[in-house]
Length: 482
Image (cartoon, rainbow, N blue to C red; front, side, top):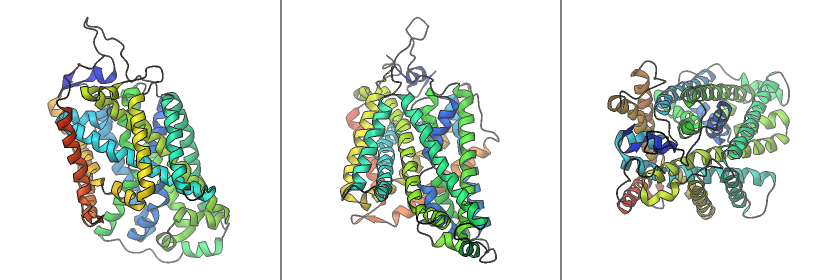
């Protein structure tokens, strides 16, 4: 089916031969099973945030009840969003993910602006920042000298790029093992909380903190709202599942299962981890901590706890880098299929099951950002964070696209439909709109290099618009099918 210039078969790599039968052209194939899809989603979502955000959320909510309610609500909101994406991904499975949905709903020029923002900052910037997180914590375990963090960061990008260039099988297998180690680290935090609760470790002081005071009153609406900003940022990334929809076996059933199982598992882990922080450190201890996981493990296991948390955060960073590489390159591949001047990006290695050129370009750009980050320091981190409004604009548009496509393409088979329509999609869009407002409020109050930080996102979109002028018109539907 074609609409808004998109050819669904072309994106899947199975264009017509001209005799009414599909031919096999290089493109995504269904090779990922449910377990691997869950590993990718969990790996993207569970990053360094769960080791940092809980102390901020504890300080803003003030009591264990409201704190745990915030994390539970974050899981619920994410589940609602996942159900919306499940409808889009099963009705329009594509390696392009959000790019494909946006293109069908608003045209390929709008979709290209999203892809450009994703390539220039959102995905490549995330890979570079995660690489520095890995480098920072590995430097605590095994320092390599003055530029230790940058060396580790560059090595992480190079090695994981090699793993994924070798093929989707090696990338998915690596992701499964990394996710298992990552979840194992979170389980260690839970065990530490249980250990302290039952009188182990620095139990006297910790028990006093845990039972320190009567429950505080309800937080203000503004404080709880700000807490939810950090909670939802920690839950962020589940939407990346849409980028593997064309490579998921039996995607019309497994996509829904992968999203729901991942969100439920992540929510359970986050609730249990925050419970462990609270039981081990108390609300005041959590709120005052600059390294809540390290403080908990140190209380439970002594000085060795600091080494454990460094290893855990390093593994979490590697897990997110690998998963981001897998899904991020799929956007570049889809762009290459739509724009003749970028057709090399649309190449697909049939043997290895990966978009080699798109992946190599993404890795090279991430390495460039690692070099920039090593010289710019905190300014680079701020630059990436200040593009959050751009992300939320397109995330909101993706949510609205569900309504647009139900009207524009009512006859497309939808194996899964969002329950309680239109209420749940409206709630999801409202959440995206709130996060857009919150991120704009934050960015507009910040400066970078003497300029208001809001101009960074404008600059990203403006540069994409200029690039559109250079690229010219997108190709006609089906023109790049072979």
